[in-house]
Length: 525
Image (cartoon, rainbow, N blue to C red; front, side, top):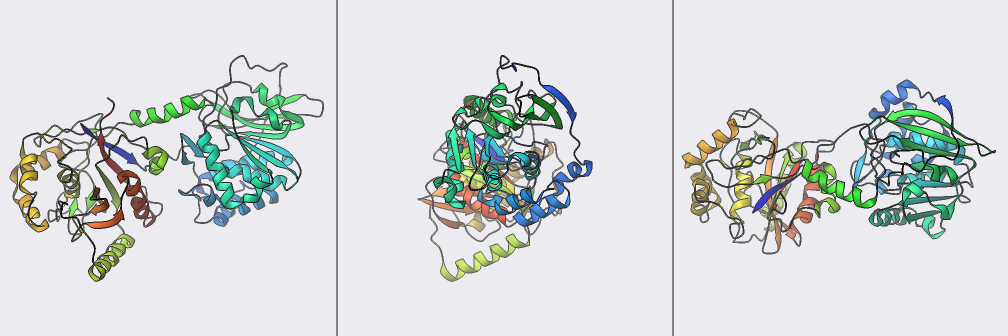
């Protein structure tokens, strides 16, 4: 049994300052003496309101916007964030002022939250000081902190997932290898709730997830004086970033900075399990066999993608595909793609068409015309001549090229696939045009969904194409084009398709209208 496994890049722009997950502090971890609450810090109202408008197309542009909106206020924070380019630590949308997924259930915080944290800790990030970054993730903030403490200082990053520690080391090794060689920056695999006693005491500690209770272990590892920046509050409840200050006499005061929404501190197993559970919980859409709700109106096709909860397609075409999960943009990361059941038999992408894409297609066709390409004789390719039907064509491409491993019940679809196995792409298109039962099923399926199906005259600017692996090569099957496109050697259909899809995304920067669907074996209910 095969399912359609969706990985959507609908970007969730929620107010999450940092989305790394760590160990929940035990309720028994209470302070040995009460903290003195000294009030609420006042941040410039306009600064917080403008935080989400700081996105840019370069690192300098991002810092300029953070400064213009008074998120960055000190020269030292500005210098640190200018000198550490975010693109070296996150590949996707590095200059967008929102959290970005980095794998293993973790994200890199939004740039404005990093700036707020650095501004708050600036008095305790003077040259020669020591700092601890709990939830170091990609390593970006750790290196920014190191930039502020300088050659005589040291910053330790701690993560409980080894792969994230390896990622951070790799990022820093490529960007600033001298920091690792000199041990001015160090990354440790460990339990974040306990801090890192091996490097204590610290002038300051930054934490990137919400603790359920007062973090006594971290307070204990502060120097006197020292400062802790940490969100506190249980998941799904009000959370607040607190500033804990220890004075020269060891007395601790607590100041409320701002309300936030952070993920909870939890252990590595729960983080990874929650990440996988999210794939299952997000099952909220169904891929209809013969219709989908987006497409393109330039010569050929839209379709209608109807949504439903755990819906299945058991209409006139007699084939059932469960639409299992929808995952945000980070789903293109290898760590998430590896969670999709294997073997993947086809990958469909819904994407926006723009002038850059059309120009690329034109140049691609000219290159193939001039140099030629090898195309497997085993590929079944349909030319799209029916308006508003690219979803149908995409699904037919995915099924027709996998009949050896996907069971299609008797009915109009199976009959259509059988009679179109041979012939030219245009001959197959003619058979599709003349198939009355398919047309009726297409219309019926579209009308049962939650969205209005486009008419043949509607002009929409999104389109479905299909990727398959055949004879060791990756092929793009787009009915608008004259032939399949051979993208070269293919060893893993999902991972190799993701690389090409990233190129699609690069041609429409900032556009969120992307969905990737993988046809994969069903391994859970």
